[in-house]
Structure formats: structure tokens, C-alpha cells
Length: 412
Image (cartoon, rainbow, N blue to C red):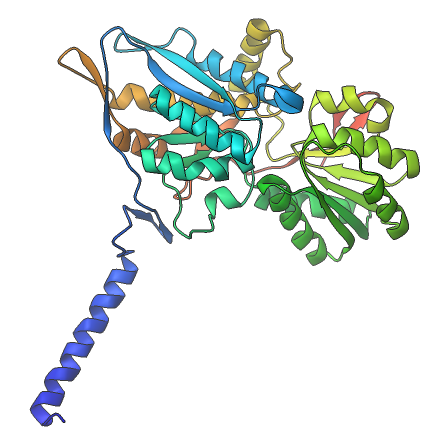
């Protein structure tokens, strides 16, 4: 249909259009995008500017379990956050920690987010549980409220189903993409466990850790002979234990929290005294030893963090024990919580401005300042990548065994 001249012009137009499409793709050119970092594309966060009247506090939220079976995790973390904010002021404004109980659940995480946004917080520490994080992320993103989790380790918060990364989410701990493979290597190379039965909490944390361990374990040459899920608050594990007994694995791998691990290991030990037991950070808590007693003996646990030895941790730990009466290592992630609150407070100090007698905070600038953080914190070096992952340290995993009613660190 085109003559020679028309074909030439048409070909040139196609080439130009193709170039424009490539350029747009390279730049993340989606109308809904607000920014990108490398191969990361963000959705459009609802950043705005907030004003705080003279004499009013700056509110920082906290979302975590403060009642029920998992308050043994949530309460120490809250105290660490409060310690970071104690006696701090920014241009004459005190800092108030507003805490909401999310019960470490998806519904609770969404509800706590609603409540915190209604309270007028400018940032949040938490949620501390991955299921609550995943449920709350859309609300925080829409409101432009940056939230830094000290303990959410699941894969999904930084690799969400929607594809676009949540710009308002960051964490000071490390991902199960690191913890799971380290556990698998330990199971095969140190414990000599060639077969494993996987038991997991069906929330984001449990399924994420299950997947990370299973994939790495099979890659290491191990064989998963069974895999079963359970719901939070389950106490009867007899059917699962029967299936484990019939499968005769070398190792039982548990992906969940101490609240369910306690009754589970009691029922497991009633039938199988010698099978090896390995779990992650959700179980590594003094409450597990208290609840399981002698049945906890010999259990292996891991943390997606180093054994803290730096001067910053010693200073924090001494102060934490003095102020709270709680042992610094009784529950995981207190150092990461202290660092998460510190990151937010330091960013606020840099971006908060006084105007007409009010304190003005640009939430986008606050997010940008938090993302630029480089901190030698109580939990180690803190630095965030484009997804919000902490990449400041050497991403180590620490391993422990329960011996004589205490967690003994294992040499690696």
C-alpha cells in the first residue's frame, strides 16, 4: 500500500517508536510508578506534608503482639523502641510512641495500621510479624507512612505479589532467603540429616521460611519426606506427629513461632525422643524453654543475625537491662528494634522544619532520608537497598542448641 518513500518514512517511525518503548522500559516508565532503584519499581506512595502544632509530640507508631501467646516477643521490642525515644526531642517536640496490639496476625496488622494512621503517626516501627506486614503494607503505602520492621524476615514483604515494591517498607533484620539456606546447610553438613519432615505455620512467615529451607535443603541433597501446615493457636499436633513417626525422618524442621512450637515439641517428644528438631527465629525465645521444659533439650534454633559483640550492642544491652529488667538476649530482635527507632528519629531530626510556630514534616523527604541511612547500630551495620533490605552487615546466621535449659551458641 505504501510507495518507496512512504515505506521509508513508515520504517523510520517504527524505529523511533521502538526506541521510545525501550527507553520507557529502561526508565520504569509506568504511569503508576513514583520511582525506581536499579531493577526495582515502586508503586505510587501517598506522601504528603504534615504539621504538628506547638507543644504537641511527634508520634511514632509501633505494631506488634502485646497480648496473647506472643507478647513475649512483642513487649521486649516495644521497650527497646521506647528506650530509643526516651528523652529525645526534635526542635522542642517530644517523641511519643503509640503502640497498637496486632496479635502477630494479618487481620491484626491491618487493624493496627488503621488505628495508627488515625492517631496521626509520622512513621512506624513494625509490624514485627511478616503476616501482619503483608496485610498492612498497602495502607501504609497509600498514606505515605514509612514503616521499618525489626523482625519481619519473610521473602514476600520485599518481593510482593503485585510486582511493584512498597517504597514505604524497610527492615533492619535479614531475610529468610539467607536464614533458610543456612539452616539447610547446617542440617545436611553438621547434623547429617538426609531426610526431613517440614511443619509450618500457614502465615507469610511460616510459608516463606518453609520455602527457603525446602529449596535449599533439596539443593544440598536432602529429601523432604513430608510437609504439613497448621494455623496459629493450634495446640493439638497428634495427627501431624503420627505422620512424622510413620515417615521416620532424620530431622523435623519447624517454621513458626514458639507459641505453637511448645505444644508441638512436647507431643513430638512423647513419640520420638531422638529425632532432631530445627527451627528459626520465631522459636528462639526464652518462652520456648520455659514452656517446653525438658522437651526443649537438644533443640536447634537459628537467628538471621549475628551474635552481637560490638561496643554499640554492649552499650545498648547494658542500658536495656538497667531500664527494663529484661535480659538483652531473652527475646530476639530487641537490638534491631532499637536501631529501627533510631533510624526514624535521626531522619526526623534532619527533615523536620519549623514554620509559623509549627513543626513541618515532609513524609517523602523522611522516607528518602531513612533510605539513605548508614548506621553502626546496636545490631550491627544498617544500610538499605532499593527493596528496603538491610545490606549493611555480612548477613550472618547464628545457630544455637538448648543445653541444660539455656541457649548455647554453636561454633560455625
